[in-house]
Length: 318
Image (cartoon, rainbow, N blue to C red; front, side, top):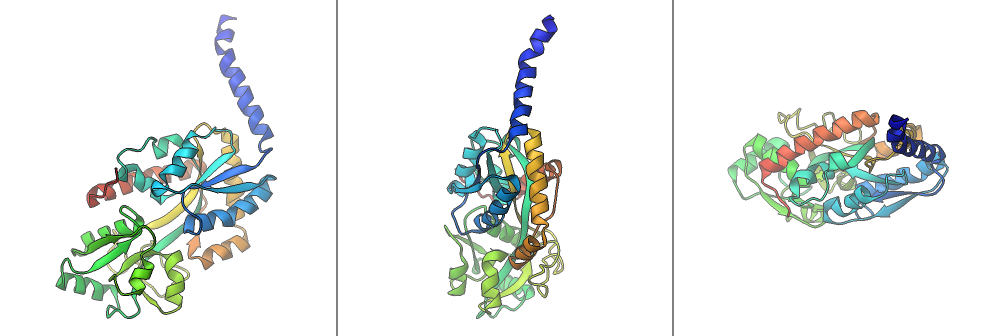
């Protein structure tokens, strides 16, 4: 009897947890996007939120919480109740931030639960259409002939645009100058004030198709379906310059496992529907299904990988 009394509080808590999971969902779910409206993470979130809500039987409402490179929105989700009514579009930015920011109040891999990937894209190395550079070989030759004179833009220190170029500089043995911007550097490249950018494919693709930018290479492991004639950095002899720009769903630590598993199943089914696959391909993206456990291991590996890259680059944000 004494042993039963000892375990009773835990048993009651477990029963309440299971009961809550069985009734879930019975009200709208908040989907936090830790970036402003209009970017890749916001676009992908809005594409999936409404049909996910239809599958779950309740509205899934987008809540943009931008700031501090995604840290403000992420911290809000870390502090949210683990009741299944808050989820977040986390991304490669979070795995970079874990090392980039020296004063984070949370641990991305420990304080959130990885639920499911949502999309994967590539960065694309682009120059303006007016640039005399016509290939990666040309760019490397130009950079070696003019050390410290070529400049590249990024959307901020420690972003994939920045780190991709740092990996490229190291692999090619060149020295180029980083110019960070608060937003996209694409307009500066178009105006001829930058020499090259490792841009996100979603932002660069319209300009490539319009003939305003030239694509020299992609950073994905395989060629992009929307740029099939553009080689990968690996094909061109730079296998270490490989970046997959991804986003996925996360929830507060302690969210009941049945809820995590349900969202994972529904998202996986949704993202593999033919109409959704077509929309993803049109944006240069793809969906690679993973279980919560598989996705969690992927996120841990990405955090370690980008931690090393950030330390090597010397980038820091206090």
